[in-house]
Length: 168
Image (cartoon, rainbow, N blue to C red):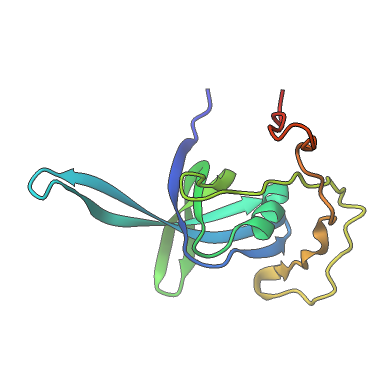
C-alpha cells in the first residue's frame, strides 16, 4: 500500500503557470486558491471560510499540457500528493507544503472546455531551448514542445448531432 498523502483540491489558479526545464525534466508551477464554505444557520446563507493557498508542481507530459491549457483565474481540480519542501537559508531552515499534481483539469461545474489530445513526442524530437540557463540551472521552455493540429476526440456526423463518447 502506498503511503503518499493524496488530496483533491478544487479552486482557482492564482498566477500564470510558469514552465521551466530542470535536471529532473520539465516542470510547470502555479498557485491554486481554494475557499471552503459552510452554511450559516443564523443567516441562512453560505459563508466563506479561510482560503487555502497551495503551490502546485506538474512534471513531464502534465507540465506541457498544463502550461498550454491553464491560465490565471481558471477554475481547476487538482489531484496529487502533498509533501513538505524543505531548504536552508541564512535565516535558518524553511519549509512549505506543496502539491505534486498527478492530474489537473478544468472545473466543468463553472464552465465548458474544448479538450484535445496532444500528439506524443519523444525527447529526441524536441529541440533544446536556445535560451541560456536561468538561476538554479532552470531554463524557460518555448511553447514549441507540442505539435499543433491535435485532432478532436470525436467527429460529429452531419446527420447526427450527438457525438460518440471519446472513450469506450
